[in-house]
Image (cartoon, rainbow over all chains, first blue to last red; front, side):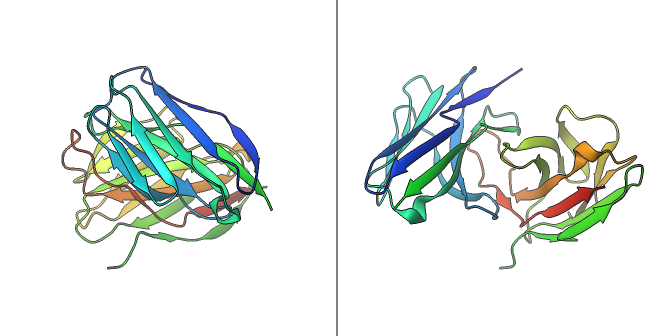
Length: 110
Length: 116
């Protein structure tokens, strides 16, 4: 079945360092979404990418969707302690089913 | 606009019992999905309902079931509870009428289930 693989599973960074998480799908996606879950909280929508090669920015966060629409990445520049949490990608193939990656848990040391 | 509401927020059950969790989606949203999340784990998809019909189903045993009412509110039921069912159960709603363009999924705060 369709899978969305996300790496790394965990990432420890020093505050101020950059962070990147990657998602790879076994099939072509119609769109991909990114969510953030703070410790003890619930996932919250960050952004959606739809177009091949699309790049979107939200302040220190940069999201990319691959040319083949099978992979995506989230890059955080100069991490802050408020960035702590788990980042999930979620792919949709157009069949009303959203497949979540396993998530990357980010730890930021002050 | 009220968000996704889940009840109860916390509950403790004994092995062998059953439990029913409730979810009220965002007004106007007709798609409701359920996910199981165990500590440190990802989101395991349970099922999705749209207009009272189960549209997608994950790989969970038949002990896990759900339904959706005409007002889009949804319930999920777990029968014959096992210790491994202890988890955070998240409900999510979406307008999700078009799988191609995608629709934002809004999560509730979840129901924490502990099975002892």
